[in-house]
Image (cartoon, rainbow, N blue to C red):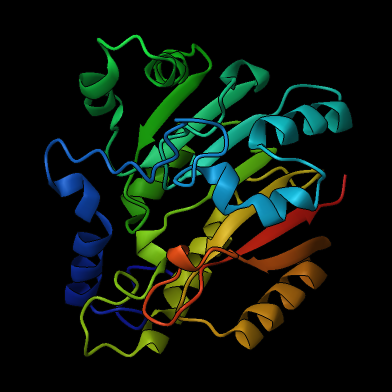
Amino acid sequence: MDITNPEALTKSRLTSLRTKWSEPDRAKGKTWEFDGIPYTPDHWEGYNHETREGLNTFGCKTFDDLVDKLEIKLGRKSNVIDLMGGAYFLESPEKAQSLTGIRINDKDQEFMDVYGEKTDIYSMRFKKIIQSPNRKVIEADILSNNGWNTIKNSNLPLADLLVCRPVGPFDVRHSVSDRFDNPNAYAGLYISLFKRMLTLVNKKGGVIFTETPDVYSDKELKKFFDETDKVEGSHTTLFTVPDEDYHWGGMKRRYAVIQFKG
């Protein structure tokens, strides 16, 4: 399904949704600290803490640990993609062969404006990530075909680890364009985005950590990923973030961990 197809979403609704999804980027200087800032490896705003239930399935506490394990499994360093994020979640980015963030606007400079002159351990950790030579950020709007063309033309290596933790865009506040929308109208949109995400992943041993949209029930998610596993030959584990503070509007934040056979 083409996400710009009017049968999936009206143009005005897609425009409204894009505006809501890019909310943290519209306010100049608002750096959106949920984008994986590594204050400490297990800080509650970071990727490691929120997805720890999924990391536990690999016997890992951090994504740095997981990258180490993937290197042993693959016999080489991993290519890592942060879809809808700035790729700040690896404390030691040199462990990866490549580290790529894909988000609507590159926020590196805004973070450097905040931390660039500081010499505390947290700021130094963050600057190390931003300045890593194997890391880059691709600016792309994934709600547009042009955005996906930008990604395709970037000649990215297939991701051995892809993490999608958009937070806002998948929760009930941002997953519909206004309070009168029927959430079911967006089912096709998320399926289309998921299919496009799969084109970025190494199907021979790759791993995906992805937040799942609130518009789906637990039963619908299980059915969807059971069907996906049959088609892709993958294995998916679903988990709910255990911390109540992550939940919103009666919905619980959930993730899928998808493993492709090597």
